[in-house]
Length: 148
Figure (cartoon, rainbow, N blue to C red):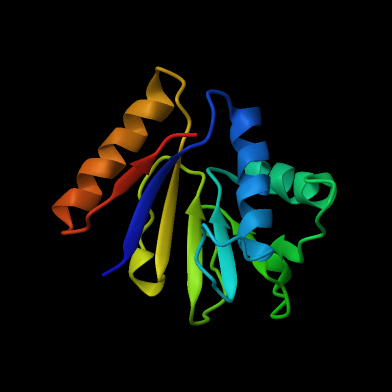
């Protein structure tokens, strides 16, 4: 079964982007609290957000250089691929999905792990993540929630 975890990623868009970078670095550096995977796909809400995250990952966190690129660049030798709805991630085994988009993606069955980031804005982003939680439950998944 797909291991599904919802993670509190802050209360603003900016906090969530930084949290995504920190989480990605921990997974890349094989932190024992996270699964050992071959690749990470990060699904953003829009092309603009994907570009913003791509730029941020080059400079943050300062102590890690994570091989990454946008989906349309098609580089098979990277650890992290950044996309958005409508873009296609490379097909590989042993992947983890980090979903920065509050909506449930269509292709979660091809992943070993699914991390849904939750922006706790006390508004629409939090509400959409709650709907995603309910959708995961209705699919027979057993999501957990981790708050920082």
